[in-house]
Image: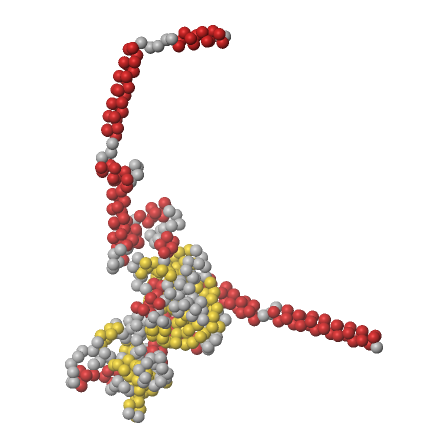
Length: 355
Length: 145
């Protein structure tokens, strides 16, 4: 009896010790190839691949030195950076491997926020563009850029949204087209840096950090390609429009709701084609208009000279207008419909037309 | 060498000796002359009002000509940097280039100034590191198509 008890206690002890060892070994084995390490290795890989092609960019605004980041987009020394980094400067420099080189300014576009530089230093490493249309909420992104006067640093984050409006406690402002919003920690000086996916393909460029610097907005690479083509072809970006201002039916720009024409601009195709304020915009080109910011993307990717079919609804009836896209003027006046109807003579207010 | 007794004897003799009356009159005259000359030197060394003001503001090594030149340089540089609308042709970079001083500076301060007159390192210590918000505030894209 006693012997049997001893055997059963021994068996219990062996079972407990084996179980504990097994549990511990499981814990160790799950920590070794952990997901944190895998993420770290992937970010390191993107950083090491991208950093030779990322440069510091310097310029003057008046007498104020401006400092940001840029990157080579081809092997011939063409550099992409943000307009905010060079602004109206007539000279720009890059720093690469400690060497300061003056760069030629090929073009700049304040509306999209992009600028194109070139240095003549022979063959350069460069980054290739990917398709930002594949990004979804929570897709992983890596930015590589120069914070302040420090070395290039990687920043890892996730896509948190796709927005055409920059919203902050102090001001709201529309971008020229929908931007990628991401939880990337962006410090001053990193604007103009490339943002990549896990393969190291450029998804966009760092444009602006939120005020708390916990998120940032990224100009997608397909929008960059459009501006690059314009600058290469015309020497400047050509932004098209037809001359229509819109708002939501509720009078707010944030609501997802039918979009209504609110304003027409003088001497534009829209002012002469028959569209009227109050018309609900159903589609422009092949794109369905579900929210006011949809029209920004249509306009951004439109080409000057092409004809866009604009479908509107007026009094329950659909109407289609074929409108030719023209280049956005530097300044334009809104059409005053009271003046047209003869009720009251009053000139439309001049407004800046996004140049 | 004198013994102690001889020394005591000599001291007794000397104790009775004293200078004549001419010595005391001469001493008094000499004292008064020294006193007057000391007063005269003090009056000649006393600073004027402006000297006292200058002395309280500037060190003894102060050179008015150098100060004037320094003030002119400060005014000139202030005029260049504080101009409200800076014409590129008036920028310090343009000035450095046009005067041909860049190459001289590059020789004197190697590494501080590049050969094209761009004060890259020195100026960018105080550079404005871009956040991107400046552009958004300056350009209202509006909600148009």
